[in-house]
Amino acid sequence: MNAHRTKVIAAAGLSSIMLVSTATAAFAAEATPTPSPTATATPHPSGTATPRPDKTKLTQRIARAEARHAINETFYTAMQKARTDAQAQLAVATTKEARQAVRATHKAAVEAAVAARQAAMTALIPGWTPHTKPVAG
Picture 1 (cartoon, rainbow, N blue to C red):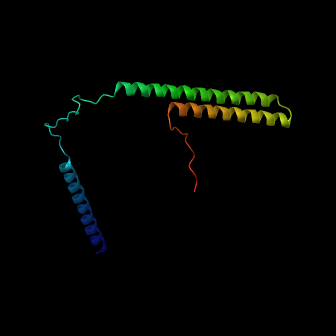
Picture 2: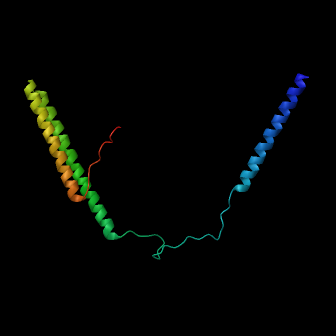
Picture 3: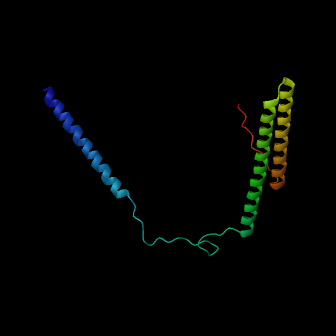
């Protein structure tokens, strides 16, 4: 009796699974929209197919990007020079006071490079502020 009940339950479960899967596939096939051949793109108000950027604004944006690139290149060069100079001086420094002087010189060179970059970026883009680290809290 148990074997017969198990076969009936298995057959009922299998048939319900098949029914649900075929019904889902049928509904999915019907829900797929077909594109209409009469759809047309709406024209841009200016009359052109795509809006064109203003050439003066584009030229200004490119010039500003090139200036930012030059400022950043100068900053990275100054930082690299400060680091290589400090490494070279630390290699020959023998006393604690000499190493402290090298570190102070390096710190001053880094601060000068940061200040020069901030001044140049502020002159280029009014209201510019460097990125700040988020405050944990």
